[in-house]
Image 1: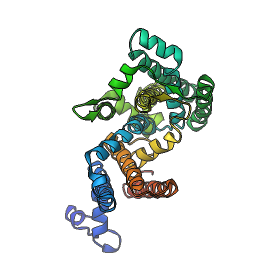
Image 2 (image 1 turned 90 degrees about the horizontal axis):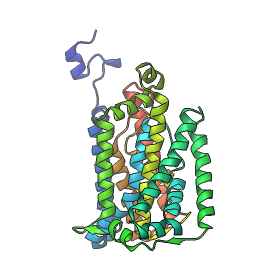
Image 3 (image 1 turned 60 degrees about the horizontal axis):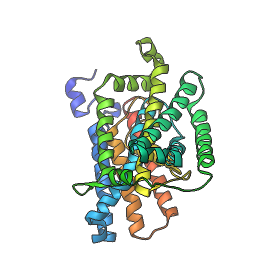
Image 4 (image 1 turned 45 degrees about the vertical axis):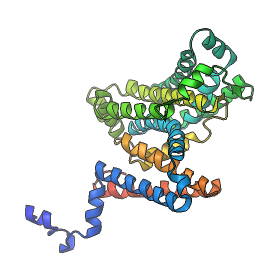
Length: 346
């Protein structure tokens, strides 16, 4: 029999060995705070590399704002993706939904209406298009009992194709100056895009960790049948999760329109891969049941900082892709190791 003192000292374990330093380190990083600390270390390491290789160009205020501006768009999508993955799903269509939302919000008819009334018309259009696409995904997955992978893959192709048809494969220039000035402007030197990302991240954290909706998301992702028996409407909740990520895509489209002053069907290319990668390395389980908004934010910043360091050092995109791939594999392996140690499925 193992006594309480044995558990503290490590006696009574197989072979009578005490816990080694590696086991204690693994235990420390297995909790939420420990995982976030590991992400902070990884981000600091990238910053050190940036300072060593790029010097003042990396640490300049303008470059820091550039990193945050680039992180803001994918960051908003990644927050929405965190909810879907935590709920046991996946969405491969986010990039295409961003493209469709940007194109629809920048058509001549939409911009004319915005000039005659208010630029908020463009924002509303993008949010409605994104939310509508998410609603279609959610209904087919939850009520149509179709696999999320298949449904969102079909939406990825369909939404991108519809965006090309609407835009006629042309770039639609944003002519509503008030929209660009407000969304693409700065407040006390901080880009509005960064402020939007911060607000979305805080709202996402509160929604996931401090509301019934968040608790239901964790329950649905952890065990859908148990959640159903507990009285949760799993189908409705799953649908809402996809609507949520769709709205996040619509907001990201608004941010892209302000940043690039153009709507095009090529917006959001491979964004789904970047969002999933940021969520995974942030500590959210791909199998669902555990999610972290803070980890997702750090994941986005890590990838964006990595890209910035590579760009400042004139390294090609192929090398960046290899580095991202290695980071994703290492993150998943660490997740599996921690899950196995805790006796839960990876």
